[in-house]
Image (spheres, rainbow, N blue to C red):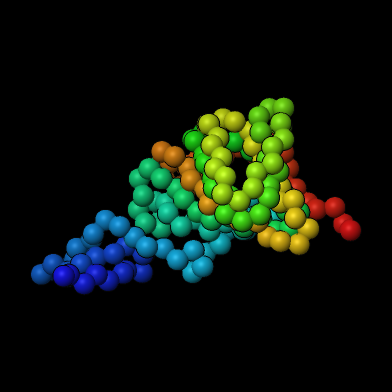
Length: 159
């Protein structure tokens, strides 16, 4: 059995050629707790982009984890690619379409959003952080997702 090693860019390799070039195995294992968190893309959400062209060299998929603080809400937006997510923890209120129709989604539910459909979400808990796992289909990074925000960043009402 061949032992594998991991490079700094998270790609795995099975050793090196005679010229010292890594023999890539074409897969990666990324620890979402150890990668950079993006707090500027959709504030106040905390997003960890684990699989994309920057982290693992993906050509068609972006995948990550989003944490939504208590009562946190992102601004309504849409993407030029398909988006989907899986509710891992918590209860969210979704705002979908031009009319911002509201839906409640809970743990273990999947959500699919076609390209161009406006959407946003809010964590309904006053005390617990919600979490979801998302993907952008046929899109290798957030930069390629063509995200267009249709409202200003949301700020919580002072209590």
